[in-house]
Length: 184
Image 1 (cartoon, rainbow, N blue to C red):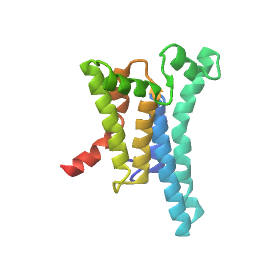
Image 2: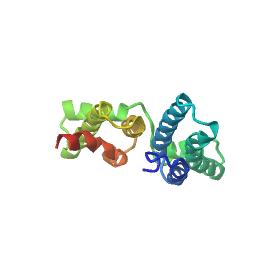
Image 3: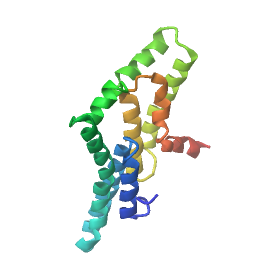
Image 4: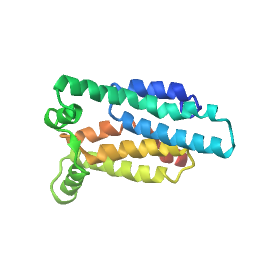
């Protein structure tokens, strides 16, 4: 909301706070970066004074400090530069696998004898991918498209150890309901 209303410093601080608790803030920082880039390019084309550009330029930088700070905190606590990634991999068994886990779940549903829960998870995952693609055609700010696309990408390309968690990782992608809402 702050980003869409060009309250750049508030958007940056809110993203900073979000970064201290969830790694999906990466999607928010990416959205802030896109929105800031659009604002800066628009300002340059309109020949607005340079002093008006520092707030949009600062927002993604401020926003990224939360997650970077959290990663640094975990690195200090684990005595590893890659501490957060190590903890995710070895403690939580969560890591980037390029969607192999998602594809395995889809294959199980299509070729095996899946449980009802497996069918629901695959249906939600495939619907999310389709809705994310559909959302790209909607007339909404590019930053919102980037945010939702990154959240969906993260949800389907990370091995989350427990395939039923995919729906939980998709919760921040609330804009997936936008195309359906427009139909209604």
